[in-house]
Image (cartoon, rainbow, N blue to C red; front, side, top):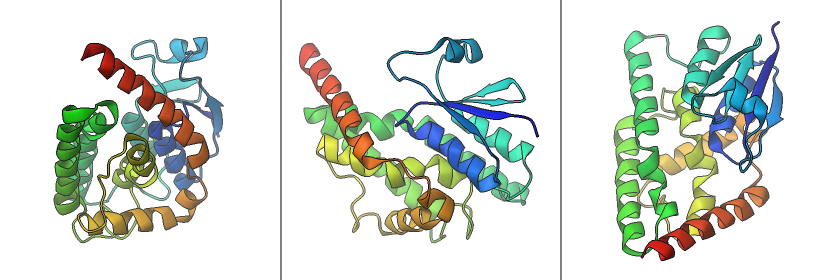
Length: 224
């Protein structure tokens, strides 16, 4: 088997998507930790275009961008499929993958803003979560049905990162009464053995995001 390596930055959710996918596929991988504040020469060499992690290295060939990596993993390792077999269902999975990526700035704006801007960003994020709950998840256990799939991994940040971001930013997006189905999905997602065994360390995440939040607040004050 060709060697598999992953360059990732903690506590970014994007590398975790890839880790979960590889674990679900049963693919062994060497993890190489990158420094968020100092990009290594290896990262710049492997991904000179965006210069961002994660980067998957398979057989010496680099693949960048987490969603692209997830698709590559699905196509390369056939076991334990993470996309539906039916073409329409696969298209719908890809639609929600794209929706999630396109809306990332809007989802996370509440964390990077203050005052009225934060109130506006919080409202918009809640509207996006409601769309995701009603039209993406619906009454299903997972986004693709009864089995975990790529769409669940892509939205894994909701299950494992959002609570920390909410706490640090002092807002609440995912209220139980407002999003009962997404709350149920979060519980089901975290109970999948591979996910449960590879959750991010909250104690490490909290001070990191507190630091990042303080930087955003300082920037907001400097420009106000």
